[in-house]
Every structure is written in C-alpha cells, then in structure tokens.
Length: 460
Picture 1 (cartoon, one colour):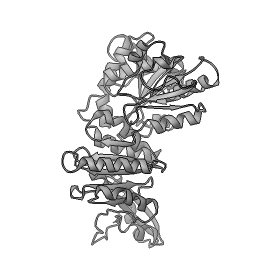
Picture 2 (cartoon, one colour):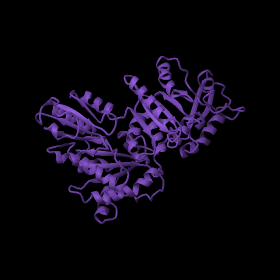
Picture 3 (spheres, rainbow, N blue to C red):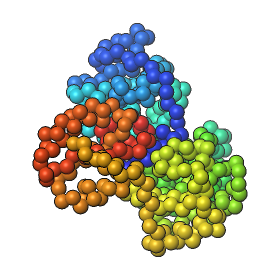
Picture 4 (cartoon, rainbow, N blue to C red):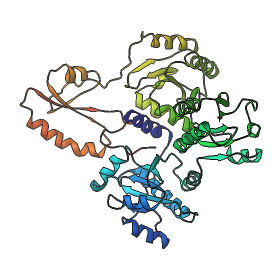
C-alpha cells in the first residue's frame, strides 16, 4: 500500500495544482455540529475518538474526512466540503458529512484503525460502519453532491428501456452492465456483490434485455457482463461470474492499453489507476507537438500489444504536461524521446534518444534480463565530517550496507516541517554517539516530489 501512495502522491503533484488555503472550521462535538447545521452555520459534523462510534451507529450513511490542520489540500477542500454538506443536509434522507482531526494525538488511533495514509482521506461509512469504502469522487462541492447522491442509491441500477441508457451510461466513463435471464440466482448475486464492493470506483447496471444496450452483440448467450469504456475496443464481455474473476476482469479492462499523460482531465482517472498499480511500468516521454509523434505512438501501441501477457503497464507522456515526472525521476528534456521502466522496488531502466523501431527490441532486452539499472545520484560530498553523515545513491551501499556498523538513516524531504523539526534532535543524537565507532547516524534527501516518510499531505 505504501508504494501505491507514493505513486498517487506523485501523480497528484504532477496533474493537479492545489492552492488557496481556506480557514479551518471551529472544533466542536457531534451534537454541537448538528445544532450548528440546523442553525445554518456549519453542516459538517466534527468528530473525535470520543463520539465517532456513536455518530457511525446513528447514521446509516456518512462520509468522514480525516484531515490535518497543516495540510494545504485539506484547507482547500474545507469550504467545498462545507458547501456540499449544506446541500446534502436537505437531501431526503439527509446525507451526513463529518470530519476528524487525525493529527490530534487523541485521534491518531482512529487514523490507524481506518487505514488513513494521507491527508485528506475521505471514507464512506455504510450500514452503521459495517461497510467502509474509500471516497474516490470529486473534491469540489457540486461534484461531491452528485457523487454521493449516486452512492446512496442501489449499487447497480436496472436498465428497463433504451431511454434508461441515456440516463445511466456516459460515453466518457466506464460502465459495467450485467445481462441476465432473471434477476436472481448465483450469477446475479455475485454481480451485485461486486457492484457493492466497487461502487466507489465504477457505475453498474443490470438488465434482462441486451438489445437495450448501445453497443455490443445483443445475441450473446445470457448471463454475461458487458463493460463499456471510452477507449480501445469500447466494449468487452465476460461470462465468468466468480467474484474474484469478475473483479480481475473489471480491473484489467478498465485501463487503456496505453495510458496518455497529457493535460486532458479525462485521462486523469486512468493515470491514477496506472500509478496505483503494482505492475512494472513502462513510460515513453516525448514532445507531442513536435517530432514524429505518430510513428512513436504506433510503435508503442504495437509494443503494448506484443507484451500484453506480461505484468507491465504502458504510458505515453507529453513533456509539457509531465515536468513534475521529470523532476521526480531526475530526467532531462535533452534526453527525449526516452523510455523508462520503473519496477515496484523503484529499480529503473532508461534509454535516452530512443527511436520508434528500437522500442520493442529494448523491451525484449529488459524481459531477458540484459539491461543494467539506471541510477541518478547526487554527487558524493567531498567533505563529510559532520556528526550526521550525508548519504547519496552512489555511496549508500558503502556507508550503510558494507560499513559493518550500526547505521541509522533519516530519509527526509527539505520542504517537510516534521523533518526540519527532527534535524536538531538528530544532530544532538549524532554528537552524543560520535565517539562510538560502531554507530553511524546519516541522512539522505529524497526526491522533491516523493512522499515524506513522516507525513503525507496528498492523497486520493
């Protein structure tokens, strides 16, 4: 999960600019929050370790934001979240939005209990907390309202006519439909179970009539599942209703063969899925507006097809949209066109100035184990005589793993407030232990866009 959060934080840092902090709402108990909402002042309930269980038990459907007061993204969300809460309080039945200061020592056990790994994290509590799902919808008021109204209804909506299709199915989104001979039985039960489990990620429908659907063969023998998508082959079917198999089918079919990293917001959901994946990632970066884009694009899609049975996902990125990625991977624009492979353990392989006809052969070399990893390191310091030693990629093996000593390494980010607070404490500890020849205290800076080991202020 930690790897996924690193990729998610990177992606949001690259694709979304979040700024303009908003004032944090005043604290108060759940009852005080409800009274304020009734008075039209604050509709978001303020919860903590003392009252969250009572609130969850009281409300069959509730959204809880876990936030930190210092988090800029939380501050930006606050007024949108409050606007949405005001609107949703008028819904029948009311949809309750709440918040928990997960940075408060009193509430930190809640962050652990509910697997909060970044801020802000929003969780949907259903059925008095018996079913808890991650909120994966928009972060502005109108989008929050629309998303949660859908989440409150049934996980899958019945399509009874062709008119329903225009209401339920959006050609720009993924939509999953189960087609049955009857709305009962094992296949239907399994489909509804998957729909309930994945409803925060996808929209689901079910029908008895395949001819109501806008695309695909209506003569396929029922039951089957049809997934509509706005890319690649547009429609894909499956007849395997095993719950695990159905989940795998949806996951595999809901990402483009090649994900595009550009400034088009329609591509951002697929970028999230790409970076969340634990698979090996191949990334081709070039300038979309100049050079032979079509030949690269064609060759890269051909490579994706050739290696489709491998555990590898493909992305093609425009350097104008992916400047953050270049900083993260410490790449240079004069290296493009370039192809980069990133493994889940952060091992990287790089080919600069790649030509379209070299892509497939280079990938074959990778799968044959013939490539050497690429490593970008800060220079080894000429003088390293401070109590806290400086470690970089090119000397970390010698200092940490081959020294034969007990080594404590701090991995830090220069912008991180917690890291700055720790620095004098680490210095003091290093000075105290300086005379012990068996101990090394060291520090290593991590990439400016990577996740601080002690805090995360970007999340999905």
